[in-house]
Length: 360
Ligand code: COI
Image (tube, rainbow, N blue to C red):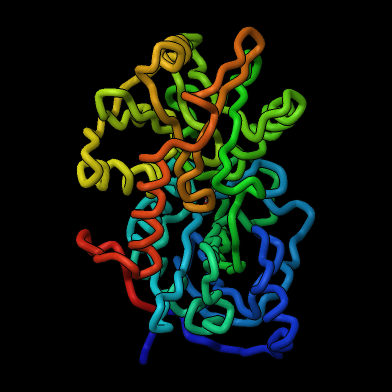
Protein backbone atom coordinates (compact mmCIF):
# COMPACT_ATOMS: atom_id res chain seq x y z
CA UNK A 1 0.00 0.00 0.00
CA UNK A 2 1.45 3.41 -0.85
CA UNK A 3 1.57 5.90 1.98
CA UNK A 4 2.88 9.36 2.64
CA UNK A 5 4.83 7.92 5.58
CA UNK A 6 6.71 4.79 4.39
CA UNK A 7 8.53 2.55 6.83
CA UNK A 8 12.04 3.37 5.59
CA UNK A 9 14.17 1.72 8.24
CA UNK A 10 13.23 -0.74 10.88
CA UNK A 11 14.94 -1.44 14.14
CA UNK A 12 15.74 -4.24 16.47
CA UNK A 13 12.61 -4.22 18.64
CA UNK A 14 12.55 -4.19 22.40
CA UNK A 15 12.67 -7.93 23.30
CA UNK A 16 9.25 -9.50 23.61
CA UNK A 17 9.52 -10.32 27.32
CA UNK A 18 10.55 -6.75 28.08
CA UNK A 19 7.70 -5.36 25.98
CA UNK A 20 5.21 -7.66 27.74
CA UNK A 21 6.44 -6.43 31.14
CA UNK A 22 6.04 -2.80 30.04
CA UNK A 23 2.60 -3.43 28.61
CA UNK A 24 1.52 -5.13 31.84
CA UNK A 25 2.20 -1.97 33.88
CA UNK A 26 2.61 0.90 31.43
CA UNK A 27 1.93 3.89 33.70
CA UNK A 28 1.78 7.05 31.60
CA UNK A 29 4.51 8.36 29.28
CA UNK A 30 7.29 6.16 30.67
CA UNK A 31 7.90 3.63 27.89
CA UNK A 32 8.13 4.18 24.17
CA UNK A 33 7.61 1.94 21.15
CA UNK A 34 10.27 0.87 18.65
CA UNK A 35 9.58 3.44 15.93
CA UNK A 36 8.75 7.08 15.32
CA UNK A 37 7.32 9.06 12.42
CA UNK A 38 9.25 12.06 11.15
CA UNK A 39 8.98 14.75 8.49
CA UNK A 40 10.82 17.99 7.85
CA UNK A 41 9.56 21.32 6.58
CA UNK A 42 11.78 23.99 5.09
CA UNK A 43 10.66 27.39 3.86
CA UNK A 44 12.12 26.77 0.39
CA UNK A 45 11.05 23.12 -0.14
CA UNK A 46 7.92 22.68 2.00
CA UNK A 47 7.27 19.25 3.56
CA UNK A 48 9.69 16.43 2.72
CA UNK A 49 11.50 13.37 4.12
CA UNK A 50 8.34 11.82 5.54
CA UNK A 51 8.84 8.36 6.95
CA UNK A 52 8.77 5.88 9.80
CA UNK A 53 12.11 4.85 11.27
CA UNK A 54 13.62 3.60 14.53
CA UNK A 55 12.92 5.64 17.66
CA UNK A 56 16.08 7.72 18.05
CA UNK A 57 17.27 10.90 19.81
CA UNK A 58 17.38 14.19 17.90
CA UNK A 59 20.70 15.94 17.42
CA UNK A 60 20.11 19.68 17.80
CA UNK A 61 22.44 22.63 17.47
CA UNK A 62 22.46 24.60 20.75
CA UNK A 63 20.96 27.60 18.93
CA UNK A 64 17.94 25.62 17.69
CA UNK A 65 15.02 28.04 17.86
CA UNK A 66 12.65 25.86 19.89
CA UNK A 67 15.16 25.69 22.76
CA UNK A 68 15.06 29.48 23.09
CA UNK A 69 11.65 30.70 21.95
CA UNK A 70 9.43 27.62 22.47
CA UNK A 71 7.98 27.61 18.96
CA UNK A 72 6.36 24.19 19.38
CA UNK A 73 2.97 22.48 19.26
CA UNK A 74 1.74 18.97 20.02
CA UNK A 75 -1.26 16.65 20.07
CA UNK A 76 -2.43 13.69 22.11
CA UNK A 77 -4.62 10.82 20.89
CA UNK A 78 -4.90 7.10 21.49
CA UNK A 79 -5.08 3.78 19.62
CA UNK A 80 -7.38 1.16 21.15
CA UNK A 81 -7.37 -2.61 20.74
CA UNK A 82 -10.88 -4.02 20.28
CA UNK A 83 -12.06 -7.45 21.48
CA UNK A 84 -11.45 -8.97 18.00
CA UNK A 85 -7.83 -7.78 18.08
CA UNK A 86 -8.29 -4.93 15.59
CA UNK A 87 -6.81 -1.50 16.35
CA UNK A 88 -8.68 1.79 16.09
CA UNK A 89 -8.05 5.51 16.49
CA UNK A 90 -10.65 7.77 18.08
CA UNK A 91 -11.48 11.00 16.18
CA UNK A 92 -7.93 11.53 14.83
CA UNK A 93 -9.32 13.99 12.26
CA UNK A 94 -10.22 16.33 15.15
CA UNK A 95 -6.61 16.21 16.38
CA UNK A 96 -5.32 16.81 12.84
CA UNK A 97 -7.48 19.91 12.48
CA UNK A 98 -6.52 21.24 15.91
CA UNK A 99 -2.84 20.67 15.01
CA UNK A 100 -3.37 22.97 12.03
CA UNK A 101 -5.03 25.64 14.20
CA UNK A 102 -2.20 25.40 16.77
CA UNK A 103 0.39 25.68 13.98
CA UNK A 104 -1.24 28.87 12.71
CA UNK A 105 -1.15 30.42 16.17
CA UNK A 106 2.52 29.52 16.72
CA UNK A 107 3.53 30.61 13.18
CA UNK A 108 4.59 27.05 12.34
CA UNK A 109 3.95 25.35 8.98
CA UNK A 110 0.59 23.59 8.63
CA UNK A 111 0.82 19.83 8.25
CA UNK A 112 -1.96 18.68 5.88
CA UNK A 113 -4.66 16.61 7.60
CA UNK A 114 -3.93 13.58 5.38
CA UNK A 115 -0.23 13.66 6.36
CA UNK A 116 -1.13 13.84 10.06
CA UNK A 117 -3.44 10.85 9.67
CA UNK A 118 -0.95 8.84 7.58
CA UNK A 119 1.88 9.47 10.07
CA UNK A 120 -0.19 8.30 13.00
CA UNK A 121 -1.65 5.28 11.21
CA UNK A 122 1.67 4.11 9.81
CA UNK A 123 3.37 4.41 13.18
CA UNK A 124 0.60 2.40 14.85
CA UNK A 125 0.92 -0.24 12.09
CA UNK A 126 4.68 -0.47 12.57
CA UNK A 127 4.29 -0.77 16.35
CA UNK A 128 1.02 -2.71 16.47
CA UNK A 129 2.53 -5.15 18.99
CA UNK A 130 2.65 -2.24 21.44
CA UNK A 131 -1.10 -1.62 21.44
CA UNK A 132 -2.12 -3.18 24.77
CA UNK A 133 -4.75 -5.88 25.07
CA UNK A 134 -6.79 -3.97 27.64
CA UNK A 135 -7.40 -5.43 31.05
CA UNK A 136 -8.71 -2.04 32.15
CA UNK A 137 -8.37 1.05 30.00
CA UNK A 138 -4.85 0.57 28.60
CA UNK A 139 -4.22 1.99 25.14
CA UNK A 140 -1.37 3.29 22.99
CA UNK A 141 -0.95 7.04 23.54
CA UNK A 142 0.25 8.90 20.45
CA UNK A 143 2.11 12.15 20.67
CA UNK A 144 2.50 14.09 17.40
CA UNK A 145 4.59 17.25 17.77
CA UNK A 146 6.18 19.95 15.63
CA UNK A 147 9.00 22.27 16.58
CA UNK A 148 11.18 25.05 15.17
CA UNK A 149 14.41 23.22 14.28
CA UNK A 150 16.28 26.05 12.56
CA UNK A 151 19.58 26.94 14.21
CA UNK A 152 19.14 30.71 14.48
CA UNK A 153 18.80 33.11 17.39
CA UNK A 154 16.81 35.89 15.71
CA UNK A 155 13.20 36.15 16.86
CA UNK A 156 11.08 35.27 13.82
CA UNK A 157 9.19 32.19 12.62
CA UNK A 158 11.75 29.47 11.91
CA UNK A 159 12.55 28.56 8.31
CA UNK A 160 12.87 24.88 9.28
CA UNK A 161 10.56 22.74 11.40
CA UNK A 162 10.57 19.08 12.36
CA UNK A 163 7.47 16.98 12.79
CA UNK A 164 7.44 13.71 14.68
CA UNK A 165 5.09 11.19 16.25
CA UNK A 166 6.12 8.98 19.14
CA UNK A 167 3.98 6.37 20.88
CA UNK A 168 3.76 5.20 24.46
CA UNK A 169 1.61 2.47 26.01
CA UNK A 170 -0.60 4.09 28.63
CA UNK A 171 -2.68 3.16 31.63
CA UNK A 172 -4.62 5.70 33.73
CA UNK A 173 -3.11 9.22 33.76
CA UNK A 174 -3.90 9.75 37.44
CA UNK A 175 -2.62 7.05 39.78
CA UNK A 176 -5.75 7.76 41.89
CA UNK A 177 -7.80 6.74 38.81
CA UNK A 178 -11.54 6.94 39.12
CA UNK A 179 -11.51 7.58 42.85
CA UNK A 180 -11.55 11.27 41.95
CA UNK A 181 -9.26 14.28 42.08
CA UNK A 182 -9.27 17.53 44.02
CA UNK A 183 -8.62 20.76 42.14
CA UNK A 184 -6.75 23.83 43.41
CA UNK A 185 -8.00 27.30 42.47
CA UNK A 186 -4.94 29.52 42.35
CA UNK A 187 -5.28 33.12 43.43
CA UNK A 188 -1.89 33.80 41.92
CA UNK A 189 -1.52 32.12 38.54
CA UNK A 190 -3.69 32.27 35.41
CA UNK A 191 -3.22 30.27 32.21
CA UNK A 192 -4.31 32.37 29.27
CA UNK A 193 -5.49 35.82 28.24
CA UNK A 194 -7.72 36.80 25.30
CA UNK A 195 -5.53 36.98 22.20
CA UNK A 196 -2.94 34.68 23.78
CA UNK A 197 -2.18 31.03 23.13
CA UNK A 198 -4.77 29.44 25.44
CA UNK A 199 -6.66 27.71 22.61
CA UNK A 200 -3.47 26.32 21.04
CA UNK A 201 -1.84 23.10 22.17
CA UNK A 202 1.67 24.45 22.59
CA UNK A 203 4.36 23.41 25.03
CA UNK A 204 4.66 26.93 26.44
CA UNK A 205 1.16 26.73 27.94
CA UNK A 206 2.20 23.63 29.86
CA UNK A 207 5.57 25.04 30.97
CA UNK A 208 3.80 28.13 32.31
CA UNK A 209 1.45 25.88 34.28
CA UNK A 210 4.09 23.96 36.19
CA UNK A 211 4.47 26.49 39.01
CA UNK A 212 0.70 26.45 39.49
CA UNK A 213 0.79 22.65 39.55
CA UNK A 214 3.40 22.74 42.30
CA UNK A 215 1.22 25.19 44.21
CA UNK A 216 -1.68 22.73 43.84
CA UNK A 217 0.47 19.87 45.18
CA UNK A 218 1.60 22.02 48.12
CA UNK A 219 -2.06 22.41 49.03
CA UNK A 220 -2.75 18.70 48.78
CA UNK A 221 -4.53 18.92 45.42
CA UNK A 222 -4.00 16.81 42.30
CA UNK A 223 -4.21 19.59 39.71
CA UNK A 224 -4.88 23.27 39.30
CA UNK A 225 -8.09 24.70 37.85
CA UNK A 226 -7.46 28.10 36.28
CA UNK A 227 -9.69 31.14 36.56
CA UNK A 228 -9.77 33.73 33.76
CA UNK A 229 -6.95 36.26 33.60
CA UNK A 230 -9.21 39.34 33.73
CA UNK A 231 -10.15 38.70 37.35
CA UNK A 232 -13.82 37.93 36.65
CA UNK A 233 -13.51 34.71 38.61
CA UNK A 234 -14.74 32.51 35.75
CA UNK A 235 -13.68 28.87 35.46
CA UNK A 236 -11.40 27.96 32.55
CA UNK A 237 -9.65 24.58 32.37
CA UNK A 238 -7.10 22.60 34.32
CA UNK A 239 -4.15 22.73 31.92
CA UNK A 240 -4.44 19.04 31.07
CA UNK A 241 -8.24 18.69 31.04
CA UNK A 242 -11.49 20.57 30.40
CA UNK A 243 -14.02 20.98 33.21
CA UNK A 244 -17.68 19.87 33.17
CA UNK A 245 -20.42 20.27 35.80
CA UNK A 246 -23.65 18.31 36.09
CA UNK A 247 -26.58 20.16 37.63
CA UNK A 248 -29.62 18.96 39.56
CA UNK A 249 -31.80 19.90 36.57
CA UNK A 250 -29.70 17.66 34.33
CA UNK A 251 -27.56 20.15 32.47
CA UNK A 252 -24.00 19.27 31.50
CA UNK A 253 -22.30 22.66 31.76
CA UNK A 254 -18.81 23.41 30.48
CA UNK A 255 -16.94 26.72 30.10
CA UNK A 256 -17.26 28.33 26.64
CA UNK A 257 -14.37 28.22 24.18
CA UNK A 258 -12.06 31.18 23.72
CA UNK A 259 -9.02 30.99 25.94
CA UNK A 260 -9.30 27.25 26.69
CA UNK A 261 -8.30 24.22 24.65
CA UNK A 262 -11.04 22.82 22.40
CA UNK A 263 -10.80 19.33 23.84
CA UNK A 264 -11.79 16.31 21.74
CA UNK A 265 -13.11 14.55 24.87
CA UNK A 266 -14.95 17.78 25.82
CA UNK A 267 -16.72 17.72 22.45
CA UNK A 268 -17.36 13.98 22.79
CA UNK A 269 -19.16 14.37 26.13
CA UNK A 270 -21.17 17.35 24.86
CA UNK A 271 -22.31 15.17 21.94
CA UNK A 272 -23.11 12.13 24.11
CA UNK A 273 -24.84 14.11 26.89
CA UNK A 274 -28.40 13.83 25.46
CA UNK A 275 -28.08 10.01 25.45
CA UNK A 276 -27.88 10.24 29.23
CA UNK A 277 -30.75 12.72 29.49
CA UNK A 278 -28.36 15.66 29.96
CA UNK A 279 -28.65 18.99 28.14
CA UNK A 280 -25.24 20.24 26.96
CA UNK A 281 -24.61 23.89 27.82
CA UNK A 282 -21.49 25.95 27.01
CA UNK A 283 -21.37 29.12 29.09
CA UNK A 284 -19.27 31.04 31.56
CA UNK A 285 -19.40 29.80 35.15
CA UNK A 286 -17.83 31.67 38.05
CA UNK A 287 -16.03 29.97 40.91
CA UNK A 288 -18.54 31.64 43.27
CA UNK A 289 -21.42 30.07 41.34
CA UNK A 290 -19.73 26.68 41.54
CA UNK A 291 -19.13 27.06 45.28
CA UNK A 292 -22.65 28.16 46.16
CA UNK A 293 -24.22 25.63 43.79
CA UNK A 294 -22.16 22.81 45.28
CA UNK A 295 -23.34 23.91 48.75
CA UNK A 296 -27.05 24.08 47.91
CA UNK A 297 -27.05 20.95 45.72
CA UNK A 298 -27.58 22.63 42.34
CA UNK A 299 -24.25 21.23 41.13
CA UNK A 300 -24.34 17.52 41.83
CA UNK A 301 -21.27 16.25 39.98
CA UNK A 302 -18.08 17.62 38.46
CA UNK A 303 -15.61 15.92 36.17
CA UNK A 304 -12.62 16.73 34.01
CA UNK A 305 -12.25 15.52 30.42
CA UNK A 306 -9.13 14.97 28.33
CA UNK A 307 -7.50 12.37 26.10
CA UNK A 308 -4.95 11.27 28.66
CA UNK A 309 -7.29 11.60 31.64
CA UNK A 310 -10.41 10.32 29.81
CA UNK A 311 -13.14 11.39 32.25
CA UNK A 312 -11.86 11.97 35.74
CA UNK A 313 -14.31 12.64 38.57
CA UNK A 314 -13.60 15.84 40.51
CA UNK A 315 -14.58 15.32 44.13
CA UNK A 316 -13.60 18.64 45.66
CA UNK A 317 -12.07 22.10 45.32
CA UNK A 318 -9.70 24.13 47.39
CA UNK A 319 -8.64 27.80 47.26
CA UNK A 320 -7.01 30.13 49.77
CA UNK A 321 -10.45 31.01 51.15
CA UNK A 322 -12.58 27.92 50.52
CA UNK A 323 -12.44 24.15 50.70
CA UNK A 324 -15.52 22.20 49.69
CA UNK A 325 -16.54 18.81 48.33
CA UNK A 326 -18.82 18.11 45.42
CA UNK A 327 -21.87 16.29 46.80
CA UNK A 328 -20.56 13.65 49.25
CA UNK A 329 -17.00 13.84 47.92
CA UNK A 330 -17.17 10.64 45.90
CA UNK A 331 -17.36 10.19 42.09
CA UNK A 332 -20.81 10.97 40.67
CA UNK A 333 -22.99 8.28 39.11
CA UNK A 334 -23.66 10.14 35.87
CA UNK A 335 -19.95 10.92 35.54
CA UNK A 336 -19.12 7.23 35.82
CA UNK A 337 -21.85 6.30 33.34
CA UNK A 338 -20.56 8.87 30.85
CA UNK A 339 -17.04 7.60 31.40
CA UNK A 340 -18.10 4.02 30.64
CA UNK A 341 -20.04 5.21 27.60
CA UNK A 342 -16.96 6.95 26.15
CA UNK A 343 -14.66 4.00 26.93
CA UNK A 344 -17.18 1.50 25.51
CA UNK A 345 -17.17 3.35 22.19
CA UNK A 346 -13.38 3.72 22.16
CA UNK A 347 -12.81 0.05 22.96
CA UNK A 348 -15.43 -1.21 20.50
CA UNK A 349 -17.88 -2.47 23.14
CA UNK A 350 -20.65 -0.08 22.07
CA UNK A 351 -21.95 1.05 18.70
CA UNK A 352 -20.02 3.95 17.17
CA UNK A 353 -23.09 5.94 16.10
CA UNK A 354 -21.11 9.10 15.36
CA UNK A 355 -18.49 7.54 13.11
CA UNK A 356 -15.70 8.50 15.50
CA UNK A 357 -13.54 5.38 15.11
CA UNK A 358 -10.99 4.92 12.34
CA UNK A 359 -9.50 1.49 11.75
CA UNK A 360 -5.74 1.28 11.46
C1 COI B 1 -3.81 14.85 26.53
O1 COI B 1 -4.81 14.59 27.20
O2 COI B 1 -3.52 14.24 25.49
C2 COI B 1 -2.95 15.93 26.92
O3 COI B 1 -2.39 16.55 26.06
C3 COI B 1 -2.75 16.18 28.35
C4 COI B 1 -1.37 16.00 28.79
C5 COI B 1 -0.88 14.70 29.19
C6 COI B 1 -0.41 17.04 28.39
